[in-house]
Length: 248
Image 1 (cartoon, rainbow, N blue to C red):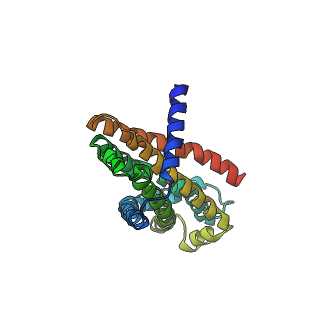
Image 2 (image 1 turned 60 degrees about the horizontal axis):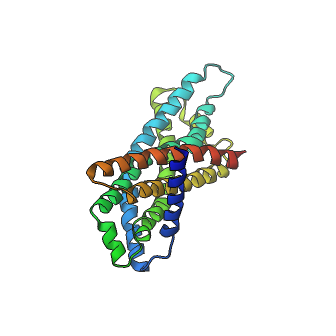
Image 3 (image 1 turned 120 degrees about the vertical axis):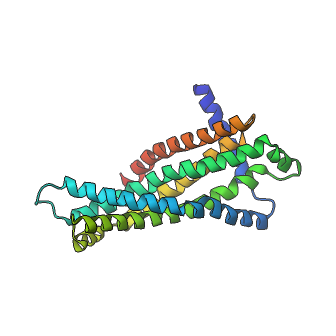
């Protein structure tokens, strides 16, 4: 098991060395980035907005019901909702959701290209397939994922505000005051650093599994599953590491 793990780590590192080589044609590379921004980012806006709005509402309601003493001011609801969303929910939970959506797409796309020998054809004509196929996806994810996470933060806080107003659990003024109370801009920086790292992990790990797919349609599905599972595990592990490094 350890031998197999070390084999995959070594092959992953070697693939990343190939991925980050200079592209053959800059114009094609830039065009591919624009295509991947649309495929990996724009297509995810709906699911991110929907989940963020309802999770923000749930966070607000749960916080309100757990405050059962008048000694705790009501603006704490807005404060706790904001902190939960900014520090953990949006950068980590949404990234896990994107690992399922984006990761499976990347792995299945590259896996299909491998089993149909399209990657071999690209290699034969003298183009580095790792750079051509994976690098634009990584760049696009690193660019667009922070935008998605910022949108998620806004939607979640807005969802919490709407839940507080409609249920009567907290007044609008109290909730808004809690959102603004004790705010530190470093919290946003911390969330963006995590988001960029997670974006890289999602695409690179899923791309690795897709790139080295062998067999047929069944193996493509297996590679897609492995890409999602392993990128999700990497997100959880690096979440702990980054939290310890950046907040300690």
